[in-house]
Amino acid sequence: MPELTARVARASNPAGTTAMWVRDCLDGLWQDEDLATWYPSPGFSPARLATASLLQFLLHLSVRQAGEAVRCRIDFKYALAMELDDPGFHHRLLSDFRERLGEDDRADALLSLALARLRSARLFIERGRQRTDSTHVWSAARDLTRLEMVLETVRAAPEEAAVLAPEVLDGLVVQDWASRYGRPVRLPAQPSCPAGRLGDAGQDSRRLLERLAAIGPLGARADVRRRILVQNFLVDSANRMRPRRPADGVPKGGRRLASPYYADARRVIRGNTRWAGYLVHVTETCDDESVNLITNIATTGPVRDTQALPGIHTRLGRRGLLPVEHLNDGYLSVEQLQDSHSVFGIDLVGPVEARGAWQKKAATGFARDDFTIDFDARTVTCPAGEATPPAPGAPHPPWPPTPHAKTHLQQVLTAIAINLQQLATHSRTPSPRRIDTFQQDLDWECLINGGSVDHGDAK
Image (cartoon, rainbow, N blue to C red; front, side, top):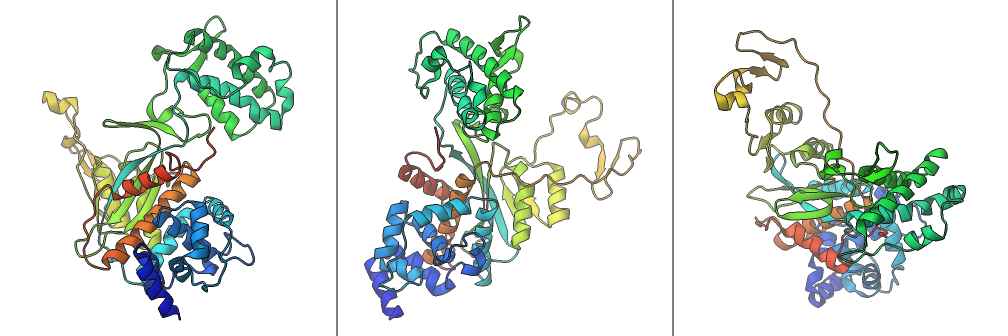
């Protein structure tokens, strides 16, 4: 009967070939024991919920469609090892399970379990070659102008205070306040009196900050909104709150908050692409004789590709998937080349940053090339032959935090789905893949989820 079910599923739905391959060749990616502490609900298999979530991303289904597919589709029942008359489970269980996966470090642990299963099936080449590149991820927050950002911040800050410390609002939220901040901010392209409204918002924000400071910290969101107000206003010599000007030191790039609801979303510029959100660094194998498989996902803020390398190597080391060569298109430093080789046994391949010291351009004095650096002994020898004392070893940067757990989980599920689709479609034969395949899958999620891959509760 199981063989007949598999043949019927393949014939009726060619798109379910990947789900069939997972059951036939791997006998599933997870066991209930692996995920029992994540979802300790009696009567429901966490391994089935994880597989159903993966199939949802693989086939670009909504949560409701995935729940209906578990109930009706033969290929889903076969992949989840369910009987044909099994009624399945309510689709809300998938949403609840995804919420649990977004906590702590469970998304990366889920990827590690899937990669360990593929490794045990000898689908990885040990100590091969890998490459890392990054792409953009938009946050679910609406893009705000400076005036909209300030007005929305002043409007939203009392909401958290009203729950934790309602006495803050006594004498503050009056009729004028309600008329200015009584509803979410939506301004036209050319709002009326922008300078005056920005100045009034500065005075209101000062009164609000004084009241919040008097009762102590209220929470993470209140602190984010306080930082936004500090980035946009300062107290002048007349003891008035006025908007910051470029001469006052306006934060730029990765330091400037982009939304009062997402603390880690930043405005990023890469060439001609501008967005407010995050970066996702994708690492995959790239050996000629094997299928390209994604081995690591790092969802970070706007950091350079080379800054994410120590954390990526640490994760790959824990999974036992360190490569011999690691290709990277970011500008590498000599220190990174040496540290990667001595600590992880990895040869980094990529462009080395140019040394544009003025001494070298003017051909006068000494430049960095004139000094001899012994990285093993941690000493530097000057042109006169004098060596410095050995420097203490510097610790490696910690793993970059994931700015938004839900966003990172979606990248992980997308990566696992791509791996399975690659293996099911091409088996072990070489399959050169377009460099933007991962971005295309993310774009599919954007279309399904209303223009954003982030399922957060954007305001």
